[in-house]
Amino acid sequence: GWHELTRLLLPGMRRASSGRIIQNSSVLGLVAMPYRGAYNCSKFALEGLSDTLRLELHGSGVHVSLIEPGPIVSRFRENAFAKFRENIDAENSVHRDSYRAMVARLEHEGPTTRFTLPPEAVLAKVIHALESDRPKARYAVTTPTHLFGLLRRLLGTRQLDWLLRKASGGGSR
Image 1 (cartoon, helix red, strand yellow):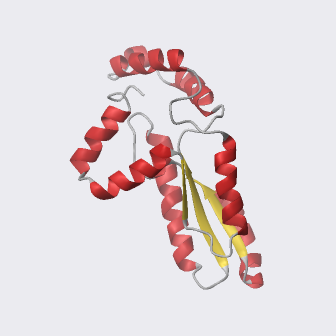
Image 2 (cartoon, rainbow, N blue to C red; image 1 turned 180 degrees about the vertical axis):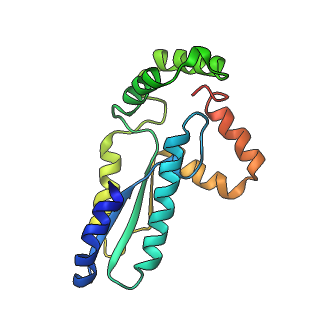
Image 3 (cartoon, rainbow, N blue to C red; image 1 turned 90 degrees about the horizontal axis):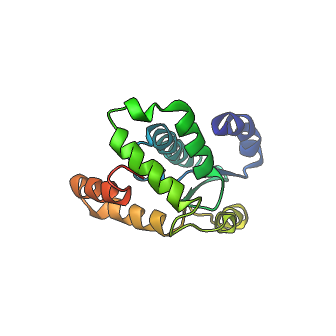
């Protein structure tokens, strides 16, 4: 995946003293939401890997940027919901009530939520990261990403956990 491609291209970038590494993370690389453990873990790991690469490549001419979208119009929810139905025995889970609420919400809500942006919002950040003389380390995309990025710095853990539970419908999102 991301790491293998970076590992293969990085020697050439170092020789050229130039290059861009752009990783696609998520708002869930900044804060965790219930019932999204594997996805949260993968995005937190990508954030850490990108931060490490940025520090290690300082002064090399190779720039590392993270794109951190929140909800974007795509088939992500539809695909995740299909995998949930395929892999989770919701009716026999200790989380059955939360899963039922989540399923009801997803069946009613459809593929988008209030803060969902079109894919072009991500593309604009990628273009800036590619073309800027001084690309940013992080590009927040969508209101939830900006908001949760700020709140994780301002709130204590218990307050942030409470807010994340509320934002996720008490775990049912």
